[in-house]
Length: 221
Image 1 (cartoon, helix red, strand yellow):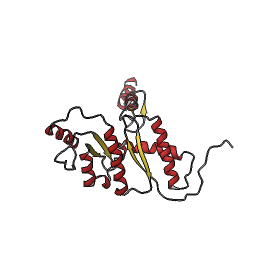
Image 2 (cartoon, rainbow, N blue to C red):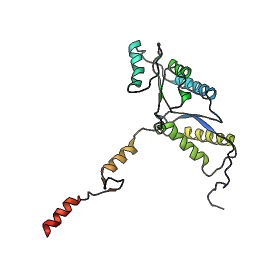
Image 3 (cartoon, rainbow, N blue to C red):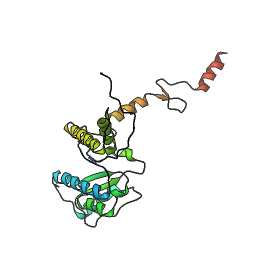
Image 4 (spheres, rainbow, N blue to C red):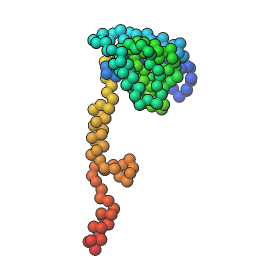
């Protein structure tokens, strides 16, 4: 009585749950849907439904740019990329940047064309660079909260927990800021330290070099 919850020692693989996620870092708001599998026939319709609703809720475009300016606004997001997809001949005003991880299902021609036709520019994290996608961060938070001290008995139950945690998050969302104040504090703290011997160890005070110490000793003898 009164002790912490324990996980059962048995591990039973009863199925897989996946969480489709759209996350808006500036507001912290997210949209999720729990599923048991993610083929394109499941993934794309959900994205299209949610993205259509998001675009519809955006403020109207104050000034429609001319064709050249509009294409330049789209093309600049491909500057420096080694692999680029072809932009549509006629592009609507750019309304949204959508960061995807580097999965083949996110790059199908029909889906990418649908995104562009709705004013959405897809951008892809590099291979082994999923940490650049903030949706990965929010998913780890949701999973850790949903599973804290609990052991789901089925994928359906796990999906219910994840979606409930997401609703709770949206009630009091936390905006995410890339390289925000915490990163600046870490940088300032690091600058106040002195590295030791090229390792990860540091000192708050500089340590004299061996040569300077030896010279001082020789002068005193």
